[in-house]
Length: 349
Image 1 (spheres, one colour):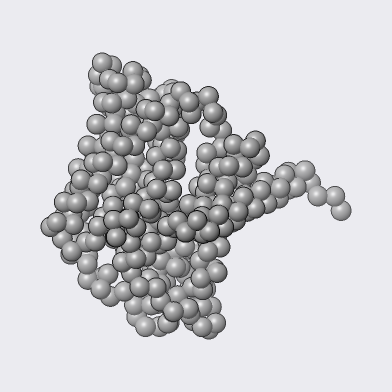
Image 2 (tube, one colour; image 1 turned 45 degrees about the vertical axis):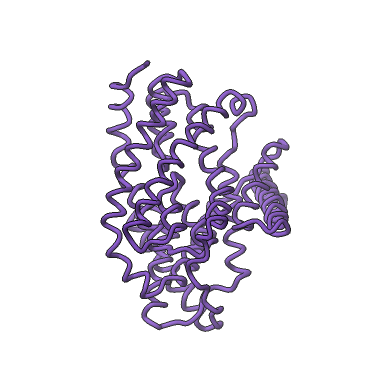
């Protein structure tokens, strides 16, 4: 039987993603860079895009990567992490202030210095919630190429460079990796976490395969029902797939657009990350939160990417997840309202 063309095309694109993702991960491991599997796979897939290939990842593999990551994050959660919840209200309040500052300061730069129109500058400056941002930006007729470049560049730099920054600052490896689970416990973790992920998807909770799996896995481990985490090889598969998926999100970004917007994207990133760094230092000063956790929690990246970075660095997934989940939910609700308002009431400078 002849394979239908669309299935053959999907298989080829998936194979390209896996080959280049594995090659990038292997290179980063050889170079002994922080979080090498995740960031290396992402860079490898971007190289494939630049080479004119068309990497892609089916939704089933993407969800599988999210699921494996969620199981791994849950297995790293301890009772001490649960006790740290007392620090979250202050930290989440400062996160809200930080997001507002990031939007207004980055937007001001893009309007006054870059000379971009108000709509484009507004949607390019909103950190995270990429799907909602692009949907509303398209409806508002913003310059989508510029919005995508700034948002994508921010995600790329954070995933690739933030692990190194955290490591150089001596703020990584805050959590101790568990020993590998036995076959029986591993089967329980995977089966129960999958049910949790499906339940979250049914309830239409954001990022269900990460959070559903993470919460069930965490419950199993904290309660003592199971012992040990996912095998390293299974975790690495999840990170390669995640990195590949993040890389494919740069599809459609042309070199001409990059050249036109790269400097302003860099400036916007420096502004947003600088603000996040300052607030992270404040959090560390007044709470017991570790610097690496605060940096990743306040970094203006996407939820899935930041959870992956936290997992690869051994940071507290509850703390990081609570902040990015809260920001994502808040922005998804507010973007349809505040985005058009900001665009209407902005100063064209």
